[in-house]
Image: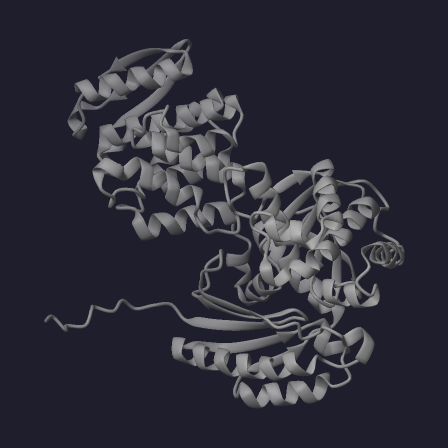
Amino acid sequence: MDITPPRVMARAARFGVVDMGSNSIRLVVYEGMARNPHAIFNEKAVLGLGRGLHNTGRLNDVAAEQALTVVARYGALARGMGAEPLELLATAAVRDAANGPAFMEEVGRRLPGATIRVLTGDEEARISAEGLLLGVPGAEGVLGDLGGGSLELVRLVQGRVAETASLPVGTIRLADRAEGDVGRARSIVEAELKSVPWLGAQPLKDLFLVGGTFRALARIHIAQTGYPLHIVHHYAIRREEARDLAGVIMTAPRKSLERMPSAPTKRLADMPFAAVVMRRLLRASNAARVVFSANGLREGWYAGRLDPAVRSENPLLAAARELCGMLGRDPGLPPALIRWTEPLVDEGVTNEDLRRAACWMSDTGSRDHPEYRAEQSFFRILRLHGVGLDHHDRAFLALVTALRYEADPAAAYLMPAKSLLSAATVRRAEVAGAALRLAYTLCGGVPSLLAATQLEKRGRRLVLRLNLGGGVFAGESVLRRLEALALTLGLEPLLET
């Protein structure tokens, strides 16, 4: 039996954060300090630490005891993974409970060496906003982060935090205040939102929703509508759709909620109250669209640790470069491809960021099985974990890469991407895929060979110029792929040597 240990590659430093909320406690361990966070471990325990707080003024005794056991486990996990430093962030339940300070002293004993912070409402709102901005750098609108104990609101102007507010209408606390009555909860939320003078001062394009119960609402809507991508992050729906969804959840009997696809068993009792908050927020903010985000407090904490130069990078391009670094053959090729495809910009290939990202991702299937290279690459990019990729970006880049690897344009597995894109955008993806396919046929992935070729648009002709002394030649494959690209552009192909 072979017991030789595997060769261990040097790994980046690890560090972790424990998010202690009113409803759940979660440990996330990150590896490295890249622009987009790489979480290598994520575990959650739904305990209801803040259940009953409104009536007793204290943390739930049973949940508090369980929380101490969970915290000790998280400390052991973090130490075992080499995650140092480890920081714990406690939010509404702990900061508002009379026995919060004593509880946190015991937490400190269970997590020796960890940094422990009890956040104010303003701190919680700002850190959550930084998490959102990590994935949506120029976000404009209002962020609503709903926990079990509180709702944090942030007004975002051109990617900056303008104002914050913290309201005591988290799902658990709201249910307690309303004594389980959804109609009463509606009045409570409406009154609390009226205390925020800047909310609804002017119509908004986007209402960004963060938090586990909001994400659960998004998953239910995804399942109900047959949406082709089961990724909550960046899932966007129109105001009317969000209102209808909230209305259904608010009025549905528990048995009906249980039967809904993707309904979360442990959060079922909280769902009607999350729906109340979403619907009241829509009315108060006048937002035209709801955008759900998986980024929040933990990602904001991560963002605060980044070097400012790294933090300022474009998240989409950073994700593309990181994927190239892991799976590409030559990091010098994408910059050459970016230059080589510049003549197609006038043909509406796509916006600059997407064109560049497509070039960076174009060789990431080189290690896959040749028979499945197109399909593997397609799903890898469509489902890539990354904070800076919205659903349109994922669909476009996945389609481009699959076509670069000669996917059949009519293949059934491409339909999820095509259904997310307009006909004009699908055509642009076909142009970009055909161009990259021609480029790789010419150079085989070698930048110096690509430099011996040039693409040029000349009137109604697409001209490919070859330097025959540079290791390239006009074989049958080159001619066929030049014709295919020209046909996609509606131009006549011309080869010059």
